Image (cartoon, rainbow over all chains, first blue to last red; front, side, top):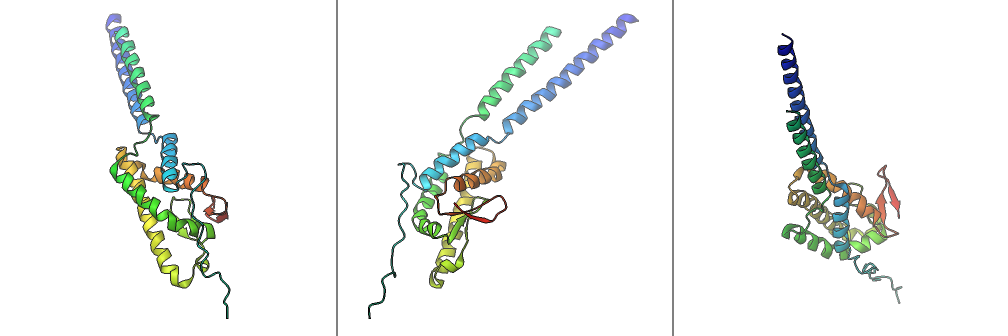
Length: 74
Length: 140
C-alpha cells in the first residue's frame, strides 16, 4: 500500500516538473518576442544620420535663400 | 528520472540564454525597400530643413512632422508645404512599417514609430520646434 502511494507521489512530482518546464519554456519564447529597444534606437540613429546627413560632424543644412529681402528701390 | 529532469532544465537554460542573445542583435535596416524610402526622405530634407529652421514645421512626438505655424508660410506656398508634409509623413509611416516587416515582427511598428519619434526630437537642431510629453510645441 505504502509503495503504491509513493509511486503515485513520484508520478505527481514528474508531472509537476513537466508543467513547470513547459511554463519555463513558454517564458523563454516570450523573452524572444520582447521589443529590442536598444537595437531600435541604434537603427533609428543610423537612418536619421542618413536622412539628415549628420555623418560628417557638422550637419549639412542648407541656409534658407534670402529671396524677396531686398528693399524696394523706387 | 531525476537526472533526466535535471538534464531537461539544463537544456532549457541553454536555449533561454541563446534566445536572449538573439534579442540583443541589431535590427535589420539594409533592405532595398528601406533604402528607397530613406533616399526619398533624404532628398525631401533639403526642402524641409528651412521650414524646420523657420518654425513653420515641427517634429511631433509620434514620429511625424506637422505644420506648426501656418502664418509663417506665405499663402501662395502653403499648399506646397502641406503636400511636402503629407509626403514626408507617408514616407515615415512606410519606413516604420518596413523596418518592422524586415525584422519579421510587423507588430513592432508602433514601438519603432515611438522610438523614432523620440530620436528625431532628441537629435533635432537647436531652433527647431519639437513636441514635449504634453504635446505642446517647444523650441529646442
